[in-house]
Length: 120
Image (tube, helix red, strand yellow):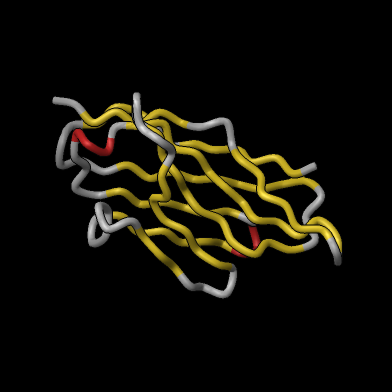
């Protein structure tokens, strides 16, 4: 099994910043990619940002130039630096990891989610 532990959510005013962290542990042969998704009330879960362990990143159009995703391969950890936060960024943010658990086994894992609220 693989466990994802998220941290860094909270309440922030518009224009403020937050940094989310997600650490993966457990039966990890290798990591292909990790990323962050979010789900606002009444909306579907959507990709925010993703990084492959080779370093390729992609972002949702709505967060480009405001959010930065990075990873620490040695710690199996991904970070999401969120700047210039807007009320529309309010959501539960979920960490995702695409993990190879054996030479033939690949699986997606999800964290429990962390609330980000942007409000005056």
